[in-house]
Length: 268
Figure 1: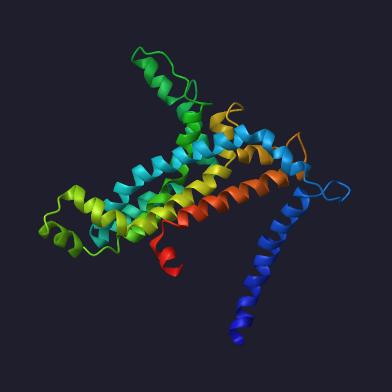
Figure 2: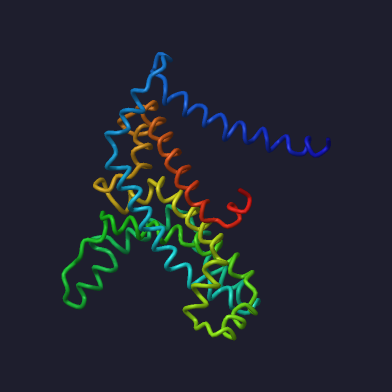
């Protein structure tokens, strides 16, 4: 009985800040200004299919790059001595202590037409390269900002892998590649699933990165939603409809990803 009283504040918090906003999104998505039911705004989302495709594609690329970079980093961290792991983890998390906006501004300075990279190219006699306001700049911003969210879950899983398994694998005749494929990857599958989810979800819904590094030519779903609520194209009903479709897409992708989680499969 006492436990219920202790959990009451959290239940109230969830209702006010999660359930109520979700119900408001559903309400605005299926109603007009007069409060009449309609599916017009849901059907209008189809005209932005190219933006949805671009957002999903760039988010998938950023997630894949994060996985390729984070996997060996997490493995190396997990095999270090305990007293070194804390220091290295602090270095990985250090950029996250800085404001998200400032981190993105830094990349604008680096990638700008008169930025650091082009300045160095000009010093060696090469022409400037257009780096800012491109899809590549958006992906780079996503990778930089969300890479720690891939490293940490991978590290937490790999750190628990018993080192004796590597010795047993070597005794059975497996080389390093076979050990990676047959031992490390299967045991780290939960970390891979968690990392992909933690990177893909914020990447597909971002709007600061695409606005600052991608320019107007790289509009993503987050930018489109922000425009409907705060921009000149004020239309909260359409913004709610786009948000609802985005939530459905994310839920479908997360459901698919959970099928690769061994723990989820055991529970099922």
